[in-house]
Every structure is written in C-alpha cells, then in structure tokens.
Image: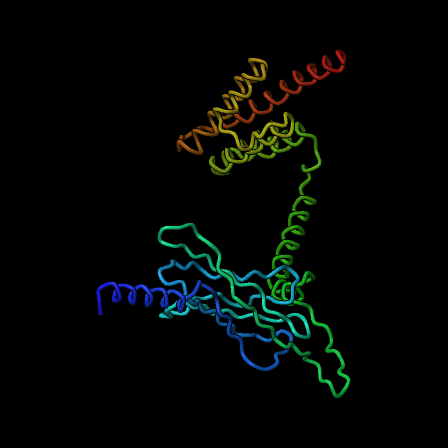
Length: 309
C-alpha cells in the first residue's frame, strides 16, 4: 500500500471516530413504572460525548409552583467517567408529567463556555395516593411545625419557675408596706422627718455606740437633702454633698453645718475616730440648723420664682 493510501485511511478513521463520538449531550435515566404524588423519585443524569470538554455542575431548572420539587441534590456520582449526577425529585401533579430541564455548562480548552441539555426529556406517570376503588375520608388537619399560637407545652415549666418568684415578691411587698405603715415619720415632710430623727438620736448619745448613731445621722441627713432638693444625696459622698451646696449657692452657714455634720460622722464611721458626747451633740444640732436654714433659703427662692412667673 502506498503512503498516500495509508494517510487517507488514517484521516478516514479519525473522521469516523469524531462522528461516532458526537456532540456533548445529557442522558436522563428514571425508574420505570408509575409513581405517586410526593414520592421521592431518583433521577440520574449522565454526560455523553464531548471528550476533552471541562464539565461544570448540573443545574435543575424547576419553576416555582411547577410540577416538580427538588428533594435532594444534585450530587456528583463519585468516580463516574464521563461525569454523572444523582438528584431526587418529588412530583406535585397528576398524570403524565415531563421532567424538569437539566443543564450543564461545558468549556472547551480553546473556546467559549456553552450549555448542554438532554437531547430528550422523559416523562413519568404520576398517580394519586388516594385509593381508586373506594372513597377516602380526609385525615383531620394538624398544625404544621412552627405554627404561630400560644405555646401551651411551656405553660407548666413557666409556672413552676414563676409561682415561687411571685410568692417571694408578694411577701417582700407586704413586709415593705407593713414596715412603712408602722414608721411614724414616713408621711412627714422632709424637715419634720429629719427633726424627728434628731430628737430620737440626741438622748441616746453616750448610751449607745457612736458608730451606730453616726450611721443614722448621716443617712437621715442625706435622706432629707434628697427629698427636699431632688438630688440623689443618698448616693453621694461627703465631698459631693459639699460640692452640691457650693454649686447651688446655698448660704455659707448651711455649707459650714453640712461640713461639720459629715466631718464628725465620717470620722467615726470610717476613721474610727473617738469623739466625746459634746461633739456628737454638736453634730446633731448642726444637722438641724443646716436643714432649718436651707428651708428658709429654698422657700425664699421658690417665692421669687413664683413671683417672676
């Protein structure tokens, strides 16, 4: 055989191989027989032809509200050559229902990407789940998972936690009200409440520990200032109280009395300072004088504001 004949035969064989290979396409394999609405239908999609192409991932084109729903996948079948994919679908309509569209994007080594679809798409016969030889009664409706409504299943655990808490809160409120109702100074104006406390403390000087008397003196004086001025005096330090007096422009006598009261009280409570009875009585007296002078100052200021308005 001559060289020209051999070359011609090789070209013919190559052309025959290309013709046998054919273009890239997809083959869809479905189970035989009839399926029911809602069944999980396994579908295998296999790539055919297209040697040398780079295959992408399978896409299932399922329109919203269409005859099919994707249950699982698509998943690539491991080790399949040519590539293959597995997907599970569920039919939502009766009768002969064609499968949805499948697409895969392929890329030639020296060309533009293109979409490959099946040459033909099979159909499946979908039957109803209801028996055909007798009438079926519908099952009673049940609430779907996550339905909105009162979570009755949590009622008992919530009551187990809340009832003891409510009982403790009620007991505390009753005790609080009882204590308040038995306190004769609770409903008194700020100045009268302070004076009642000072009258109670003065005869106890020398008979009770100074620490306890100074605690009551400091807290009672702060309570008076808080009720009368609206400032959080109970939470203020002695330094902040003196700053409040200067900032508000209170009379010098009031500022000196505040300094005297807090100096004695803080020295006993925090500095463990030993004081004589005369010093404690002077501090009690200074608290009363500071409150009386402050009342006169604030009343005059309030009258001027009323007249100006």
